[in-house]
Length: 304
View 1: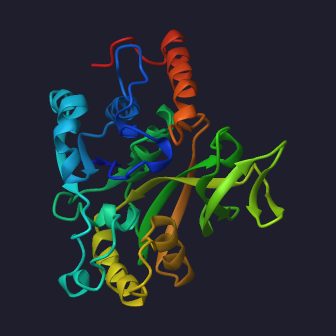
View 2: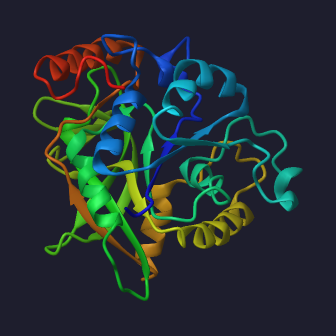
């Protein structure tokens, strides 16, 4: 069996969720968290290693809530996403910054731990079993190309919106052969009556809510680390010293690679519904959804 790794990005501060670490919020019948279900689905699909990307100050809590359990059934490693994880030449330049640099930096933190194909997901998103099966099948196939080989599992925008506030999504343009042609990171997308929208001053910019979107479920080859190193250095060169919030984001990175004809991105799709904990009010929706999945035998009452 080919080695394939699951990377779970869990270093986000989760400010919109309020008090507590949202990635570690119990949602299952026996205190399971969303990551438990993602790891279970990944193992069922064939993945044999998990890398948690966290902040160092979360390590003890992660071990208590999930790490010590999961390492009994699958190989587990930790990568630490910290402000200091940038080239030394830029550290003094951005000493006033207080948050990590985004999802691109999160993956770059794994470069010494991963030498095999890997899948990236968010810690606080539920993707469904079919998404992991699609990703594993793609990652274990042979691909011949002179460009960087990437895949993305897409979802339908209307199935990824929150009733409790705006969300950030990568809006995707896909050609007839199911390859990505462009992706635009779009912030504060809200749910309307039969449509989605972004509020700009006193008007709404409508978005087709049947659009394909990225939920940060990316399938990469380990060659991506060399590219990320180069892109991150270039990114930092162009960030103004006074800009303390700009982020190095996967959708933007992939979009730039596409525009420069340096990558191909196969768009995979899953029929499963996505759900996640963005806001505190989302928690009960997730609990009810997991309960239904257990009751219809999609998951056993005890995962491990």
